[in-house]
Image: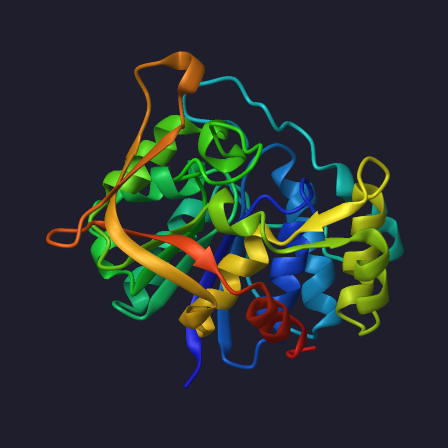
Length: 292
């Protein structure tokens, strides 16, 4: 049976969002119900998602979401990889101001069936859970690429990008009563990497060719891909790729210098969240590339 998924993404900043969307479009077990974009230039991000959907010959609703964080100044105002859009056919007109209502109505139409996959700042999801507090309980699962939960990642920052870009929305989402809430943070995502040349060699199928064009923008400033978001997506269909530990996540708000920092406490008796603390990189790469 297929799994109903909604993707909330800031595609156009880090290349891993496009890599993630390509996987969802190619995954035969994925019934992708819709895509919402978040962060600056949400329309351009929607255009990038449209380009991949057209290559995949799939007519999936795409809705630009909220561009600015709830309370703090925007730290991600641009979608630089949209510079490669002129090479690919894509839609340019999308419903405006309807992303949160689309999420609400779609989840309500499929109670207990939808996996909501968040791979960008959590502004859209924080607003969704605020305007309709019943939504978290109607999800089958919430899967986030968000946070950093241990000090075992060599050289990792204290805060992860999605969490710190809208710490107040992050707090709202982690307080929500979701039946299964899984997070994959830098603890595991930084262990699935590939250099630029290796990635170029893999991008030979039609769906990965526009991804490579977007990646070439990314490679102008760095020579490595970290598969943060695709790792989160693959665990929806094969949870054995990561080892999840139950417990509770708290989000820092009081200290402005650390706002968005995620604190993890293992708790077997009354867990609210599950956090990935280990990963099988080889299993991930096999699961990711076999769908193309």
